[in-house]
Image (cartoon, rainbow, N blue to C red; front, side, top):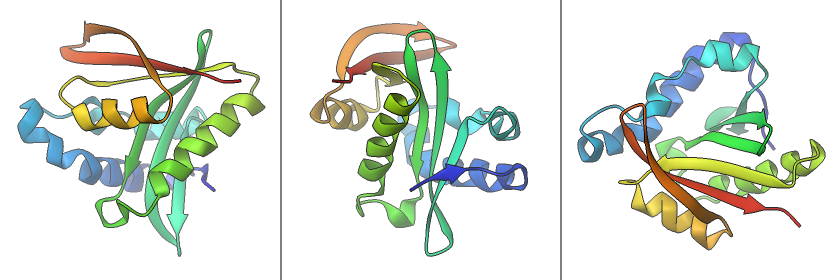
Length: 147
């Protein structure tokens, strides 16, 4: 289960996210937005979570409470841990955390060129709500209503 990240882990989170998103750079022809986030600020706001496996950072979550529900701003899995079910466990945690916080909805966005992400989220019950250009990124906005 993930835990809140600590202030001294900002560099670790940034490095993990950069590694996790590096393979998208050529496709997007720029850095994906999570690569440029301020993880020290996210940690200070209580929004950054870290998943460890045997003492090694395996994944990162950034969660924001919004008026529309819990926003999954970022989920990143370290390349060495892909395909081991960590992403699915983190998404299960996001649902439990949304319920714990009293939200009936999770919302997120991903770059439209990250088609595999759209497919994964769709398979897990998220529905596309709209597409829009935002901060120079073409984004697909999705939501999942919680029962």
